[in-house]
Length: 443
Ligand code: EPU
Image 1 (tube, rainbow, N blue to C red):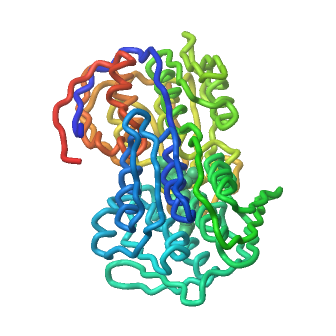
Image 2 (image 1 turned 90 degrees about the vertical axis):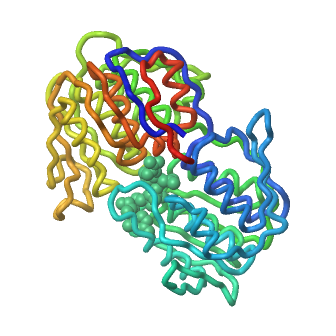
């Protein structure tokens, strides 16, 4: 796998890329297959690291995961699901947070689950307290071991009344994956309603689940004793689509993102247009382009759906360094998601971080010690630098910055980007980016 790239910046990215199934849906859809009594088929599966991690974890638990050679579609057969060794689970979890979502389905399938210490991107503490509370409410017994957390359900799992203190994506998925086969009814209040969650609900409905999404973030689930497999095409990755949109804007380019879906990207498209980006929205995808002239500065606040996604923020910040005037980005989902801006400043950007909430959205981080508001002054020409990629989305923004900058950049840690952007090096090549591979790293 590619580890370090030398990028010769200053060339607009032009051409077409295709986005496939969403990184934040596909691994969970794979986990859902464990709930079925017959095999499932998942289509439009991207070649990214999180898919490999879940494939390994499911295989360890006796699920047969086969990939169709032509299409990459996955068939997942859970009929021989079985317990796995804790050390093996630990060794195959990588730095993914997905193992926590296996708990409910594993408790239903085999009566026990184990979660090793969890990783994921380094964006704040990323605790799992909501998940553990939810699982206990369904009747799981949680034992903390030196190597991780072991869970059992000696009396089976039963429906529960759950109120999430924050509309967490993962905790909502935890409830859905656990409640569908729990005995009786579950009421979830404070649910997240991201399009990826709606797609997971669609999958569960295909399997036989009875789930009602009501207004005001309330979801009702009527437990059923058995579910069958599903056949589903994953919704397209709206984070990848927006990342290429911001890349087009930051480099003064023109990218058609085949597969991008307007309905799931409304908040991003509004922002893109307000900055002054050009859009052609079609049934096949969306063309994002820099129409020439000045870009406008603006105020953006990240939020849960239907707000502006936290994962759209980082590539957009690079485009905002090229906008005319002062822009503000208020990050309200994660407390520590501006670490990547240090490298942008080294490249010539002018980004200042503040602890105060610079926005109107009520935010949990306001009176605390978190640098979660960014003030970006532009336009600032960017120049090449040596950068080490910190995390997935921040890393993609570094790549864009290096492509937009004048001169050479040496970008290391590029393998992290493979967690969420499939074949991105080939895609960059297709868009006319100028770079050479300097070092490879083991997978
Ligand atoms: N939170 C808690 N306790 C919990 C769970 C979450 O305090 O038990 C907090 C988090 O610390 C965070 C907030 O709640 O401040 C939201 O976290 P959420 O649970 O919604 O995030 P997640 O499910 O862990 C998913 C995506 C993230 C994406 C967020 C928000 C996956 C695998 N990850 O994370 O994606 O940013 O939802 O949309 O689906 C990425 O793709 O780069 C990425 C980080």
